[in-house]
Length: 358
Ligand SMILES: *Cc1c(COP(=O)(O)O)cnc(C)c1O
Picture 1: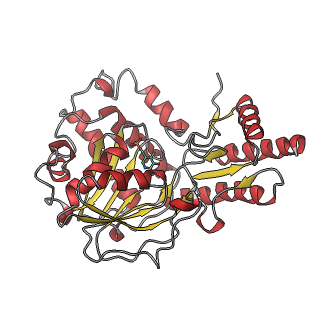
Picture 2: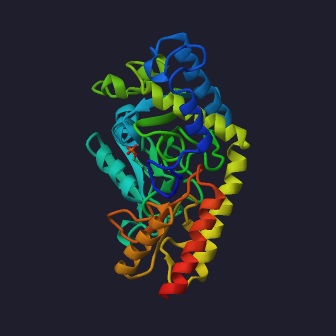
Picture 3: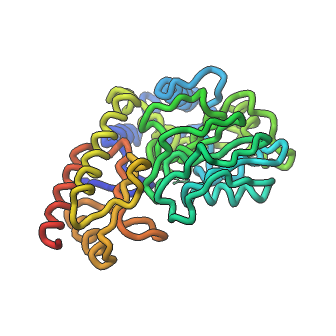
């Protein structure tokens, strides 16, 4: 059976060479005579896989030595709890509420301390990222949390807030899609199922001086210092997920790394937004300045037409274009693994649909 172009927001497409390599190594990895899934996480054969994944991610993102790279479980959502548990020393944090996940992160943090919503676009259905220059950041905050790409609404931060407290970013739907200056952050975390690998895994990059501040009641598994000392293996990690993430890092290096993929990502997003800007049928929903390069949201303005479009596209092998259940419309998620040809095929089909349904 032929593969489709999968525009799912997550879990999402993986690069074909990654899947093929995993397939080729499924029964016996190297000379080990066993699948990666069957290996002890403490064995040399597995720790080699782990160490290479960490080293490749460090290289791809130019992670400085004074940062730890961890592969944790529970996705990005688990970190919504882990962040306040690890960082709230004075018991206060700033959150920028720029989307559904940002909101959930702030709501969870409220269980552990005082949360100041420094800026929000919630009242405007998150069609933009709130203005940061007028945001009310608390100089006493333990950290400032942002969600750098808003997966559901299709918006991205075009600049970072200028704050003194450590900046914590949920980079789930933008990590590795463009260069990030790691030194600007205290913590970068990302669920893997968008730009890294399979779900259930979360990459966390944390500045070492932020370790050792955890609330005494912080569960051991969520304690970054504990996990850093254990090399992400306080308990059995998601061994298979880390292996696949590692294959993804190898693939990204082979196509030129983050700077090269950023160019491709800009090209893909431009193809879609250029067409949306001229279309008489489809309208982009995010404010132009804040348009995401990863999640492109649009509507026809007619729910029946939206549904007809999503159905007709799926019949052409352009699948998972339905918008999030909370907002409706359409969303094309075009992460690193989506080839330019997939976006070209989508635009060609949108033009045809427009001609037939205008
Ligand atoms: C997908 C996503 C999440 C949730 O990730 P899980 O791995 O399901 O916990 C959180 N934040 C952002 C920005 C996301 O895109």
